[in-house]
Image (tube, rainbow, N blue to C red; front, side, top):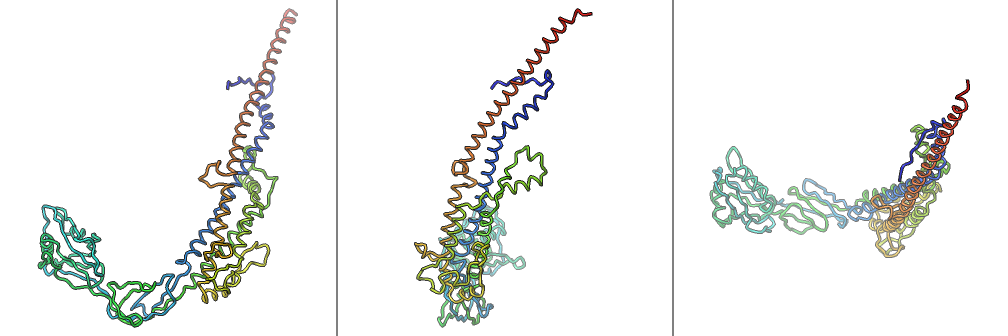
Length: 497
């Protein structure tokens, strides 16, 4: 576009720039309205996304604390004498008492060199071959092969032996006696280290194991032992001191007798359910606040010029009013909350649930009688604890029954379905931060407004140029008239004495 030469009001004496600026204020009013509409849509989009964040927060809590059996249905295993045995139980363990008499705890095999090490670094690489049997009788791929680099120091050799996971040994050298000690990392009577060839035997002879020979067990051995114990009258052994029987993991400490009692961890279930109620109340409270916010239509988004005329605090207070009520009585959110209330209050018809505990009210969770609470839940903690202690499985199934219909689905599963559906609807309306505007309805409206704003800006530029052309023409006409007047005055008055 060819720029228009602009002439200031030298001839007329008028402030042309101010005149044009004042005229353009009126012309820009429709543009300001478009920009305000755009700002409101952006605020509304952000409000919707903040609601989705709340819903996702509730969904995450439900998943992590109510739906995972390993999280909610925890069991406690208590030993009558933890110096003899300790225990932990997973969520599938039965609530029983188990008697253990420990005769012997498992120990690891050790090898101590009868002589001090006479190791000297070799000028060439040395390949060791060792056949390994673990304490439980299993073996890695044998032989275990280790290459000792040329000129490796004794400390480097020991470090290399310690770091090999297939060997599974701990090696150290006593600096006072010069002897080498090797301990198998795992316990059990079956552990062994057998020399795989003559080179390996010769290498261990240098370490002080003078009797080392190809094809035989490393000398200086003290054999490991299996744990020996009796559990509920059954005498048995294990290669390790930690083992699992019937979903309970026992760790033997020393010889002796103890009773391990496994029970449901009612505190964990109680805290999970109470935490859910607190989170549910928090989220629906915040959403209801948004749905009931007052809309102040007289407070439109401020233009840049209006902001410049106000203090920072005034702008903040004004925008708080302008942003208020953008989700007032929103149908997506109100519909989602209504369905969530139905999810929570409806009976769960599942055969795995005790009929005495198939609704929240039966386990001590009811709706607030105050209508202003908008469906918040109230807990009778005594009643809830009693229900958990009496039938923890039914409480778990009340939330997690895996039915195919609404009536047979647990409360947690219903809620997650509703949350997913509501989030999806909101995303169609307001999108995600990683989406383009074209992927959601508010974004498409913003694209359309941006196009209108660009077109209007172009139009305003043309109008402004037109005003300047008109005032320039006026200035030229005035200047010409002034020139003619001066000429005439000179022509008629020049001869007057």
